[in-house]
Image (tube, rainbow, N blue to C red; front, side, top):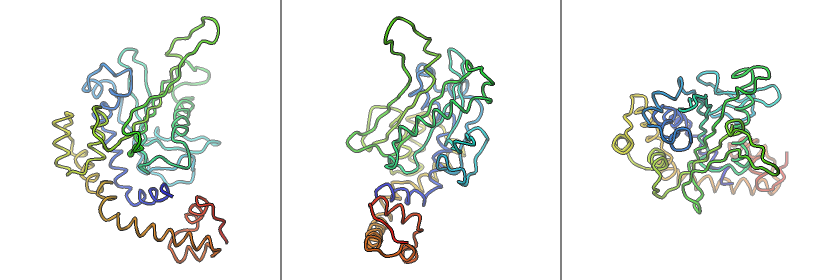
Length: 318
């Protein structure tokens, strides 16, 4: 039930989630991420990445939307950070933007997803979701980036997944996954640029200090329980990030609604009360009390109670 609780807690704080996405979508922040995880930008300066190679304005979703749920409410900026089809439903990417590879000049499509639950989801493997999103980024280019059978114009895609809480046994990490060539017989080879079209990177943030600059920048933003003013000073001194008015506002929202304060302060009492309430509802459901009665008594919807029962192998009575 840990994931059920975290989803419930995350829903109380959508402003934090949105402010975090808006802050990450600023070009200087994206430059830090590109330089660390995208091989094409390894030897390029942050300033050049920001000013020369990130194209247009990044597009940001305003409401996290469950993938493949056509009826989900949404309000997005721009029209390219969503992908839909009659058979596969609609998904909305948190941050979508384009960049030009410095040497080849080829266009790269990138998305960054910020995990709203701040934990690995237990009902599906995150990696399979990442592969699915990357595949949709590829397929959605047809009749948008290329037309008909002109597959030679397919753009390389990067999906980057920022996960707030690393497993305690593992700590912080940055891991990348991509397509490779392996000869099973003979000597035929293809240019790497023809098949190396999908790259998936996961970034997990732990609680311990590391030597990785990007991880420490993200830990400062999302893990450190310090004031907005102190974060602003450290961002400027340690990472050469001069905040715009928008960034200062977003940073203020994040600090005021920070997960550290939210979870470690008043939410400790709320979490205890929630656990006690959950135990009571589980007991009622287990003893055959009708779900409609439990819903009315607890204030929880029957849909949420159904999820609670399924995760605890309880057959509900209607």
